[in-house]
Image (cartoon, rainbow, N blue to C red; front, side, top):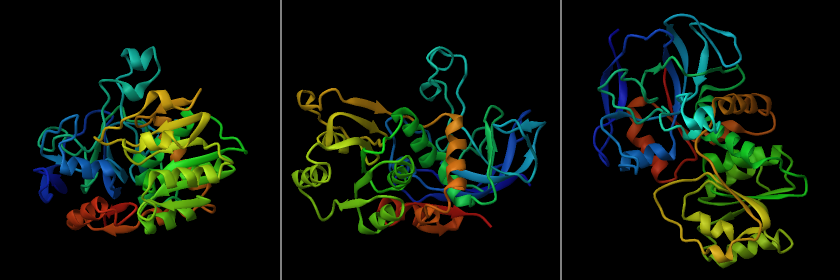
Length: 362
């Protein structure tokens, strides 16, 4: 077997192509993984529409949320807990920081390492070719930390842990404790927002409020822990949305606001935060937000998040396994598609028809 099938972005805003891509020789310590599932992310859609501000060099295999079974290993490997990794193990794996720059070794902030490697944007015509998850096989570089997936976690949920869920875990690490009297407001009802609702509820928030759209996503938000939701498509006046939040918080505003929609939501979210509150900014995009600094809540704390550290992949998998009886994680995966249906899946994500789409592999 010298090649495998993969969904490749060959031109922005054009249908993805299913192409044959070489299966590379493995470096010492590298793995070849047979894909079980790849979930899609808003970033995949943005890159398809692209190019992203960071720039894209096409062609690329789309997808950066993989879960798969180890097919081949070049040498002995262990997982993040020090256990041996074997052919047949179902795994997810981390991004790679250089480990020696200022951000890695002094600041201890590997997520902003300038040499950090990630997936879903790497040229598919250059070694090691298979660095996107919408392919039958994927290459795992030697420095990646490996997390085994327990039987009770589905491959589709595990794949989502490789982006949305581990990023939320990173965010809550930065946020710190959520106290039992606190209200958490979440802006956004996509995968990040709905998983954040579950984590906020699990962390003991008094109430979890969520603003998003469309209604089908909000129904999932409520099953994932949101106590009250507001439909952006029905309540279009920002003042009405602010009044809704303040009406549920004794007029103060939320203790914590988590922005997981897009940059344009930041300015509105800040008007919903109480004085002295904490604002966690996870959602991205290319939009610009205009903020009146003079009107910021007094003594507030503003935090931004980029991706995650390897331990957050483990935290996400453990959360899925240990909280499976409390939250319906499978409801987050709205629809599954075959690899040949990649364009249908991407269109469903782009139109917000689904919370999260998954590419499944036989």
